[in-house]
Length: 411
Image (cartoon, rainbow, N blue to C red):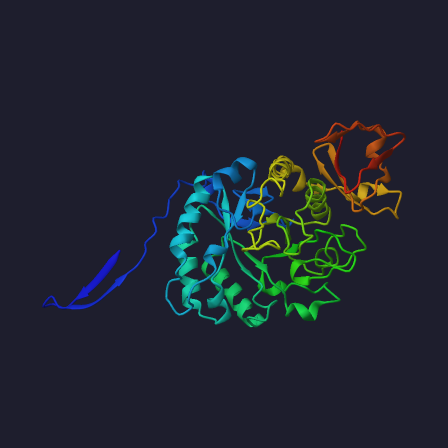
């Protein structure tokens, strides 16, 4: 819309061109699109009052395909740039198209706020983006990434950004992919990694493939782990009281011997993340990452080499398990007798059924023995694979394959 102001004699005093958004209105609360995205006391999102475990893909564009695969959330680096001095960010038109497409495909978008504006504390542009899109049915949450970790902005800017989001849009959370200090100052102790006062949810990265004993790159969330698929310490040792999400590796690094994760590694990373309490899971395809030959190296750039068919299968599996993932914890009801085995587990309780997640972090088979009163009388099945187990006297014996992750259903 163009607005023109004229004097009484018809002289043009000034004009302004502005984008307007038609906000859909719904009767009552009958439509999930009209309802806010909130965070429940268990740390999981609530959309339309229902617990939700977001499964997302970074650098996403093929929305119909992602929706069919079971993804619920998307992100785009195409909307993070733009001169901070303009009242409206240059990528807002692109963001409008992405949000429209996300909504029409039943997806929601994690919208990152303009990076230069955050770095320079130019809040008018940020304010306009939030006000324009806060009622869009395709919006999942607002976000910001690595401005402090890379030394591009002080923490004060991120805290001011968080306050602005809370002021303008209390109905969508602010998800922060950033640290309380530059990353080089968090080399050893990562318990106080996130600035809780400046976020509703924290997210960070885990890109460990290929495993290397001496590998440490904190911006990638990888740490030396003696060739175990060891979950990152920012997650396992955190003192944060806010919900945490994770973005696992779904791209090929630039070294000549680099590769994509195998299906077993994708699955093990996903279940180790669940076991360690994440409230959302993303597949990170990169922001223009290239392989050693300079070719684009994200999951969708090399679908065969990246095992895209299996990733879709895994996403559908996790989507089907959403009611279990967000259910009450039952981990205290189980005990792993072989405490030295490189195996982690967690359990959920939904109705009268228990679900036990177990993951082998090593490249060798591992014998496990779970004990629980629930195993004394319950029938046990293994989901998503043709594998049978039969507990005896409250003990479940099994062998987990290399990097194997299993879901046991105990009735």
